[in-house]
Length: 179
Image 1 (spheres, rainbow, N blue to C red):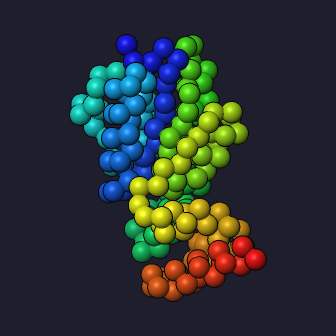
Image 2: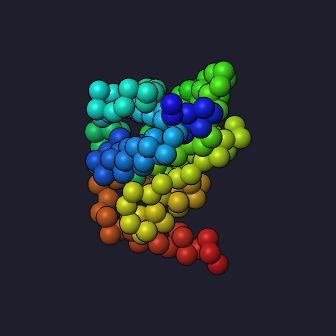
Image 3: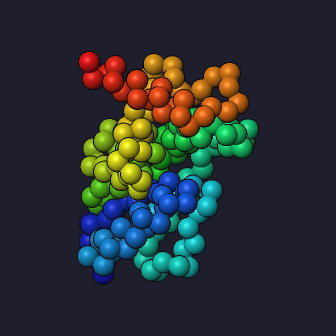
């Protein structure tokens, strides 16, 4: 049987191009004998019927304001989703750790869930962030906490910001942190 203290928690981001690679990784780990628990949001939740019967699916309620979810501020939405996931993720991971014989070996999460990765580490669970896009996008995601701290995100006073302007802001912010 998969498991015996070899449980991995996988937390894919619920957007096209993010969930599928992590769910495929979960499948590979399952074939290697790991028990798999999928943490997921209610937004685009995976269908348990499409996965092995011994997968565990744990829903997380991530209450991002609807106006932000409907906005064109993608960076703000992604940031808010991570922020709003922190408490429910911590609650569910703490519960998983408390289960007898659960043996959570690690958390594998999309890097967009940077708060979940921090919570995992704080609870003493090894955590790995997986980037499902290009190296350039990875660099942008890793810059989110610093961009928030410096006040660049979430974008204030603009309905739409062009991708080019945002890329330039991120590039300059990253360069300033290196010097």
